[in-house]
Amino acid sequence: MWGAVIGDIIGSVYEWDRIKTKEFEFFQAECFYTDDTVCTAAVADILLNDSPAAQTLQHWCRQHPGRGYGGMFHRWIGFSQPEPYGSFGNGAAMRVSPAAYLHRHQTLEHVLRATDRVTAVTHNHAEGMKGARATSHAIWLGFQGGQPDGIRKIIKEKYGYDLSPSVDEIRPGYRFDETCQRTVPEAITCALEATSFEDAVRNAISLGGDADTLAAIAGPIAESLFGIPENLIRTVKQRYLEEASDITEVIDQLYETS
Image: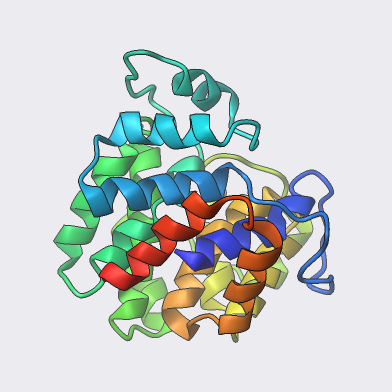
């Protein structure tokens, strides 16, 4: 989904140069697409074309090398017979938004089945599966017309995440963390507390953590609540994805199909 891609690109320059403010230039020349965008495109391909999940994910990542893949996942990309490795990293949640978008007019069971399919190939730890499911569930609820308070209540009850701290309460003590446990709840809060899509991305980056992934999770949730201004999508395509036509094509296909 474009919400994940835009969040990833805007957050890319702050993954290692972290900030604790929402006041920053939204589109910077140094921004770039990372593994979050590549994996999101791969998931879209898997679900749109009923492609083999592990091999398709590997193919996309091999086509886009050097995009910041995590250590174990980077090794997994090269395996001839890829197997899940029990990860609970936040990569489970940053790539899963196409599962919710593609099935947004269907039941939650359809969404979660698709989510499990694309997650279990790597992140088959209970916390990894939960993080992906909670993200997809929140996106799906937004598309059903759910309001932030209602979504917060359902996600808290279903997945046990503490969503009570506000963004301002999380920010001072928050540190870089690559686990689902310390990324997904915070990213959901950033989206549910926002006043617009852009505000959600700014919330996520301002936490001073794994900025691109926080924003790639918060972005599609915010998209389901607010939509995305067309000028943001156009800018991302023209400035950051001009040489990655395969990514824009599969994401556009996702929107056209669903």
